[in-house]
Amino acid sequence: MKRNTFQKAMIHEALHTLHHPTADDIYAHIILDYPQISKGTVYRNLSQMVAEGQIVQLKMPDGPDHFDHTTYHHYHCKCTACGRVFDMDLPYQNELNLIRGADGFITHNHTLLFNGLCADCNNKQQMED
Image (tube, rainbow, N blue to C red; front, side, top):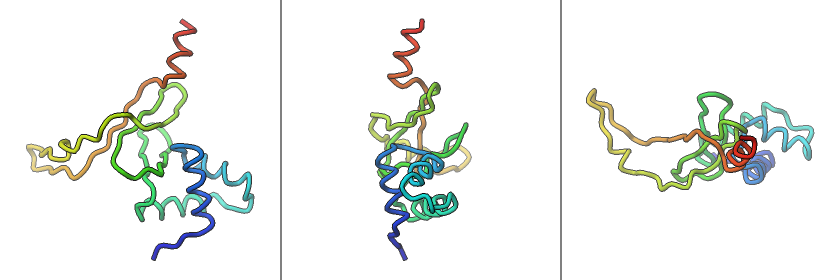
């Protein structure tokens, strides 16, 4: 049974405000207005929301996972300078889900994470050079 709780509503608000935050980012945002919330409550609700398909968990190979309120298939970028995660303006490539490996592996879906510099960090780097 899906339950919409006050805590989940606060997490959804944080996801829309912060754009691809980590669980700790969400907790820090919520605690400003609701200091009695625990970090465990935030983590537990995020896990439930991912399991229910309400949000997407973005697994990061080099740091904490990020979360996205946009649940349709799309790609993400991560700035290697500031760490910001954002949507990649690239259509989802459904044909990549048709790939079959020589060893019998069958693809069901895929994710891609592009690493590079966001526009702000790229401009800052160019000004320093």
